[in-house]
Length: 336
Image 1 (cartoon, rainbow, N blue to C red):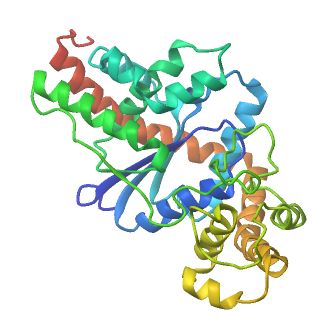
Image 2 (tube, rainbow, N blue to C red; image 1 turned 180 degrees about the vertical axis):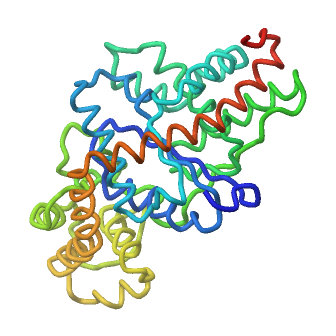
């Protein structure tokens, strides 16, 4: 990472609980690429966060490596960024324990995602689900992070991270930098094609509403042609009354760079039968080179391993300095 001292730091992590989606790309990865020239960039594949739900171990391993390949294929350069797998850097778990002792039960119980995920997983409301935001705070604070590019659903966790850091700093003096959540203006929350009230998610039981980065052109076109719209035929942005169409317009805007006004003029009088395939074709053109490059990278196992091994080494160098400082401040005896 060049000019590491001069640049501010952006930090992001995505769980490998499923295959990356168009929402992952437009709402996160594309935004990271735009910030890489301005910030020193650290990207984590958050496999430790993934096991709050029960996952097939083979699927988790496959998703983890696929995710890394798609990061690189999307334009993130391992020579200029740090990529690492969370479980390869033990400082995350260690700092998480310390920060948990400075996190209040009440504030953790108020986390919206804990309430949502508890409702969806009533038979598995485990401690990891409850303390998930503490581990996320450790992820961020280990690297002296300045900005955290996130979707709207993660903003609350970054605010909690700041609260925990402030509390610790208040007791022990200046230790942690306070990170700031940064949301992209468009594409921050890409919605499901079949249920436009819900976010497009890689963890959905059915992928009919999600465009996966590894979907073929044929599959992508089929999903867009079946996308939910409304009983009108007019292509017009109205997030309240035309949620399906507005979501498709937001996607089209992200992949073509066209404004909503330009899109409305382009499809004036043409109807959804023309509009939906046009969105599908634009998405295919965007994702095809990424998918092809990711498949090439996945076939080169030695290269992929070299990227995550070197990333873990670099990440641990930074994280160990932070953890040592924290251990000293709380009064732990230094290792001989």
